Length: 476
Ligand SMILES: *Cc1c(COP(=O)(O)O)cnc(C)c1O
Image (cartoon, rainbow, N blue to C red; front, top):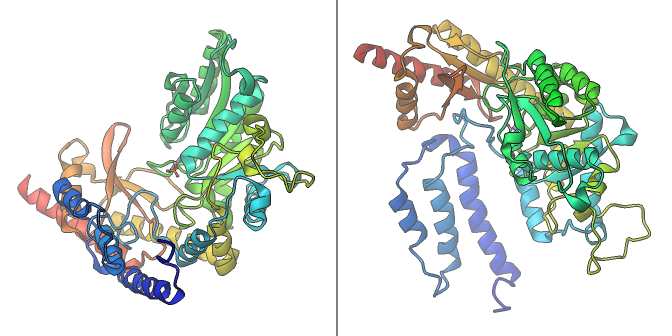
């Protein structure tokens, strides 16, 4: 067995074959159907066509996996995938994923992977400063995704407010801790409450204003009501770019209330955090500088491969308080150095080096390159809004980011309209869009989530929407 996959020339041959297939896909993504046919039996039979008793020829094995993914995926890297925050991965991060896989650095202990560890702490520092934190107060850790970063925030808030939470959990806590976020917040906040032992009923979904931002007046009223009822407000989560409509809560006002009530102020900027890299967009995130912690996914708007998320906080001691534990079997070479072992700072223990993907991307694009990409996507969002208006569509959200929700004014009461148009668009295989309810009414949701989306793709989508609407009007 040890001889398998150990010859340089044989491995190079396999790598070349793989790269050839991957580059074909990567270069020609625009030519595939965005949507696969969803047939559970067919995909299941394809996957289960082999029982592993005999090893497959490596070239066939590679083709089995590549063809499987190509046939049975929604092609999120397609320029007309106007979907959730699933970007086309940009090439530097793909290279970084490959490099990382080969070295497989162990990010539990600093001394096993000093370079990879220092890359991550440097990036935490860089982004902490971009979010406006005092450089001397910044700490943080990489996470697999925004959900893990938000869970980290809830655990930090608990340890901040309840001094012996790490030792005793919620035993002996008389007043129930409560979390506040808007009704448009990501549901990973609820999940974090569930897994932290608070239960999801500890989360107050504060209604949003007409602008779809958390209603500050109702937030304060709820805080007062809960205090009067003997509950313990724990944290408030403001969203910097909501998943549904791209709304940015008033971070300054929420931060002020957080301070007034002495509770943890977390900003979930999983998507919108990228705005701090663009001079014209960064002011939309004003107020992050007052946050206790921030979630930011580089695998969303920064187009780095999944799962690349940053949890950044402005308290130097809180991650240690929350996660520190000693283990005799862990390496001790660095015990006299002023370093942090990541396993004492995070939910994960053994983990992959996450930050290298973002580091290589920044090295290869530079901040200017990212500014251009973010600016381009924002401009494509503007173009899409203009084209929609010209065709008589009505825009329903107010995001500064390229997330556009819209409908046809004459069909707002017609429950069948939105699903029927979406069905027509998806079944054509030309584009992927979705729907989202605003104040209970379904509307269309389109996001320019791909850096390779150009004006021609925007025009084409509007034409597809117009044609589907026309066909619908003829039949209804
Ligand atoms: C996507 C998203 C999350 C969850 O992040 P994952 O990376 O999917 O775990 C959390 N909050 C917001 C606002 C998001 O858009």
